View 1 (cartoon, chains in turn red, brown):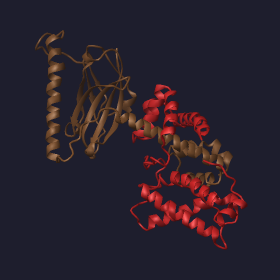
View 2: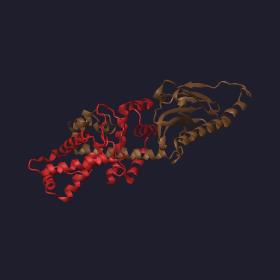
View 3: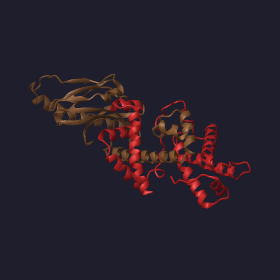
View 4: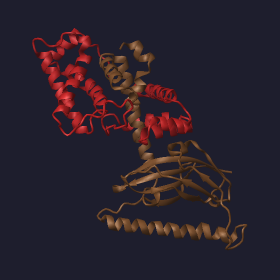
Length: 184
Length: 218
């Protein structure tokens, strides 16, 4: 994620149609929105529909007289607009039903994001991280990411608790981050 | 939610693992859309998870899958499956059971006892139970398959520590309705660690791992 300071200047340039800022805005929030929406929608097309509509409304609101003026709240504004679009999308019954929101630990319904988050260079970096893991931890991640099983079952199988899963992910992510950021 | 709360509560990891309830998830999203540090952490984590999933999936796919017969209808596939089951049964009888009976300590044609382990009623807890086999001795494991209507058949695979498939037994949905005895050919396995992996076959060639039980051959 390319870091930018979301301030008044950023908002002003976005409002006035500065191409480099517009490009950054779309690129930065596309990633955030895809990550958010993939757990709520069942197809890549739906994710794209909601994302596009969100951008359209945010940019329209920014350019209106009473649009957002606080740069540091831009992110939460995008998130709120997205939530609103998502609700409308559910209500309109466009090919989707909301995923069951009352389930605290929903099944993994990750949309195939090949192209959005998966790339050969990053795959190689992840391969190196996975190769350095203990066999048990690698098997644990396989069970976690590939088998559509309850996480408590997986924990029982490997005789670990839920905290262990989080710490394992945290460590693997930290190792990956070093290479990922160096390459980027 | 502020940044300190997000960090102290391991919200990034919980979010990536799908462990937050809807209210917590909404609150954390509202935070990380504004917080570039958490946003970067979520993005890095999501990239890691998706690439790891893609890598592990391709490694899983490298395990030879049951061939699919596109263009042939269900009756043909059912007949083909029945033939394969029969072939596997006859082959198993010829390769394992009959030679074992002929050369076993009990003498040719004499009934003999086979060690038996029951995993019935344990459900997914069976995965936490390691089964120990003695080399050169067969063992019978009573298992039940946690199947579902989406499966057209099941496979019980014995895989070694390097994930090489040592043997496969096809199980029909009919047989999987109840617990059944699966005879593990300990006589065919060298000492070491193995796993009994139960796989559900879906139409269209898709497969899903349903259970994985550790086997230790001494």
